[in-house]
Amino acid sequence: MTKKLSDDLDLISTQPDQLGYFFETVSSTQYTVPIDEGIMEPSYYRGIVNMLSQANDQDVVIFRINSPGGRMDGLLSLLDAIETTEAMTIADITGECSSAASILALNCDQCVAGRRAEMLNHEIRYGVGGKNSDNLSHVQHIKKISDKLIREPYEGFLEDHEIESVLNGKELFLDSDEIIERLNKREEYRKELATLSDEDNPGLTD
Image (cartoon, rainbow, N blue to C red):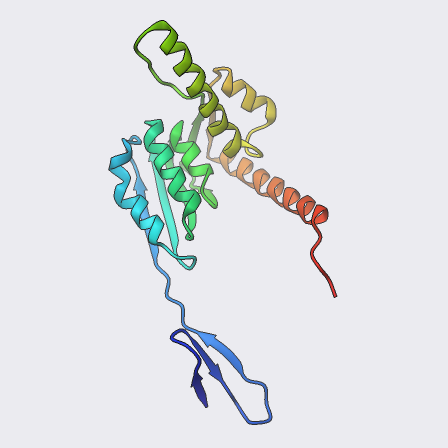
């Protein structure tokens, strides 16, 4: 016998003297977003940002990346949407993944790399105009933001000294094997952090 408990949840009762169980039917959607050009201005991604805001926790959004990077303001728009979406986000690096594109990829919940993947990591590039004092303030502001943009996603993926080198102007090139190796190392690094966090904040036990 089936009894309807709500619009989404049903109760299955097998026999009067046996334990029943609940079930619900959940629909999910897989979205694929091709990032196969330079990263553009924020308005270019309005539809993608809207989709991410409406996606639920059963949905999967795959970013297929083959991009030289691009504008920081467009990147920030995508990163905010990725951070706040309920959906699972996956970066699938199919070719070039440079600069801002690498930051986008490493901010997804999961990241995978194909056999032709390649990555370039370097500090943010930008230009300023105006009075000298204005330029100095702007450069300092951008430097603070860009350092954080690089440190957070590259943590566990690059060695600490490599992150410092990138922030100091060095370009770091990785082929597919190196990307995969570092992604695996980052996964182990995150598991260790999660274990330490659990030890510091043990849950209640019976």
